[in-house]
Image (cartoon, rainbow, N blue to C red; front, side):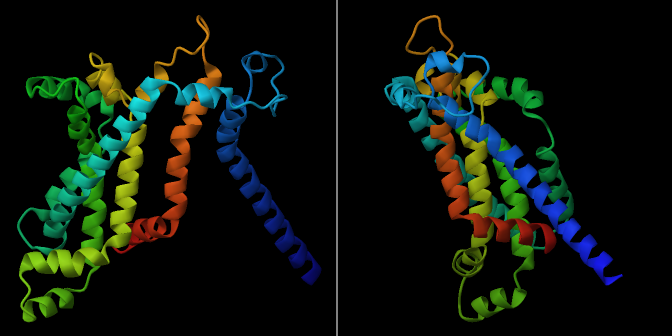
Length: 284
């Protein structure tokens, strides 16, 4: 009986380990394939059957990417846009979350439901109305239009997660700060806001990733101004060094270049992200 239990225990652990390995391979393989494709020459990329390791590794594709002025300009535009969106989302989202999480007023719950509902609409459904609004405001063809439009899907998420965090903070902190002579605004940014660092990191990083990877709005609102293209649009417009040839190697190299910073940020802030998502989902 004991031997049967031990066999079942080790069999379960073995199956679980196999499942974890399969999930890991499934998640990592696309990135691996992009990397080895970026290291292959053009003739090897179109060869059949495909090889799982470059026969003659080369950095030619990466050199072509960094010599592409449109890609470098798109990289700079994406950095500016994503950073500005994160800053605005955290600032406005923190104020809104403090009001929704700490202040008591009529309709607070319904406002939270409306904010959550704003994240449920697909991008394509709001694109026509947003295009008209951006055009009437005179922002079409500029990176300002992207900053404005990206807040539509980053600000509600930021507000929702931050509200859950503010709700979990003990009320004694505010009372003690007011007794010590702090104004409500000083209590907010000196006492409560630093305690929400995990939520700030989580929402800020997710907002940065969403803005960095966005393609539909970027393509639509910068169609007449290539100088405002983001890095995703710049990659889609790659023509390659060789005429009449789809630059698969350069596209893969560019994808690696724009993905590595995101992976580095996620790995660096991994602990904060877990804390932020867990506290925001469970304690709220």
